[in-house]
Image (tube, rainbow over all chains, first blue to last red; front, side, top):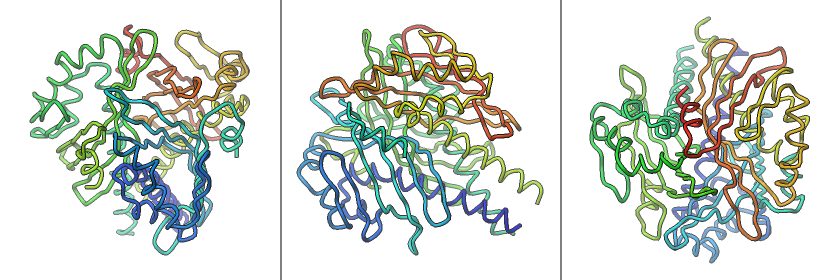
Length: 150
Length: 150
Length: 150
């Protein structure tokens, strides 16, 4: 029975991490900067390829409040996260997948940014939180391929 | 043991709702109007931003049989539903995520419609069904942001 | 208790299949041909609409090492698999959903290929593997509609 209980917990962990990843887009696209920040641990980091690394919740919140994101929201945007391959390891987890940012351009939609993503999660007293997210845009460099292989 | 059983049920509920959302696209893109209608409760509703609200299975089936959808299907279309953040509450559930309708235009694909979605589900004697789906296209209005925040 | 255990196993099967599908993109986009091949059974098949059918792991690996895929990778590509509707049947399973291949074109992204997908899986001694994947591009033909209905 102990074994079954541990396996039930692992499935719940997986569901919680799926929900966390799936909540990023709705929080981002509704401009909820503090909601986004709370997805991360207090000292969590977020590397956005081409922009740099935000460290800690204040800096992560500022990505949402900053001019690039606010300009995206003005015209309408959708941060769509794909299903991720998830690997659990006790109180840590990783997930690998894609993000696509669609933006409204005139009367049509554009895939403005397509990126590879690798997330590291920690189980905290408040549930699963992001320790680090690495977002690397798809291009002719090897950055995203190294990330997808890791 | 009772607690573990309830938690197992919750994971099965989540899986059933994921399957329901993931079956929308294949049913829509293969023109299965009655199959789409049966995803909803008998008096379920579907608000399609810019088109209005369909009430009950007959009206929902007519969205698929209607000229806009049939024209989409003629050229080829894919109704892709993103992973959703799912919240269970006993015999009810909600899910928030995105839909992207790709259509074939000549020799290329276009993201014709990108929308925020909020679903309400009910557990019925026949399994989980959609009580209401609210689909709000991404644009410069606040409609989709209000939906994503709810 | 036996019943609960079987249901726990079914949820684990579902999670394993979700992870398998979600790992296709990262393996493909990082050029891991042997990693892709190992997702299939030894004699597994992969029908790529417009290209033909690859039979067995060597031929499936060659899809990744071949000129079309290598050209995609040179400019940057993302093979994004949508959430799939999954049906388990003991040691077999099927999944239906979509794939979108984005490619970098100059300074923008293009949805180069949007397809309907139907996967058949087998439980093997090494875990779940793909017995057959059928990929049918979205177009004005009925091929993808028949696949989505099956």
